[in-house]
Image (cartoon, rainbow, N blue to C red):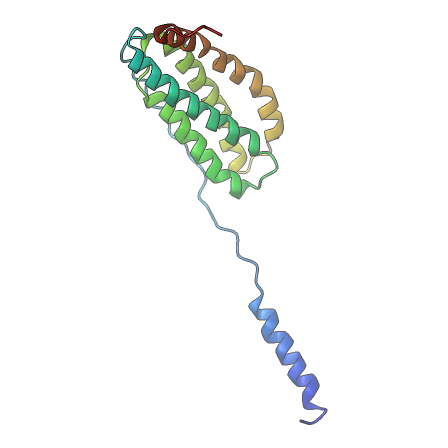
Length: 167
């Protein structure tokens, strides 16, 4: 191989290898739109241990998962948060569609309301508005904690139905 061909071969090799390394193009997502929360289903009484137990298990898990997603989104990109917001909306909807016994109505309504309020900000952020999600999270936590505290009374009632001491 001649010395003149060597630089040409190196340049060609660099050109071909440079073409192989590409950044993935950003996914073009449509603006995020969220439906209004479904209407709550009030069904059963808190005197029925199974009804109360099932509701508390379902609602506790879903609201904790919502809280976790909410707290981990600041610092992520809009693209990463897009899926988180869809998941948060689905959790809010599940909180509303889980049949709620009579003593849990206030807690369910409070959780649904604060989740919906939080989702308004998160949706706006994902759609490009300049919103500080860390500030939204910090300002929302006291209201979220207050809504969570409303689960204490139904939980105490369930413990009583099981004959357990109330915390």
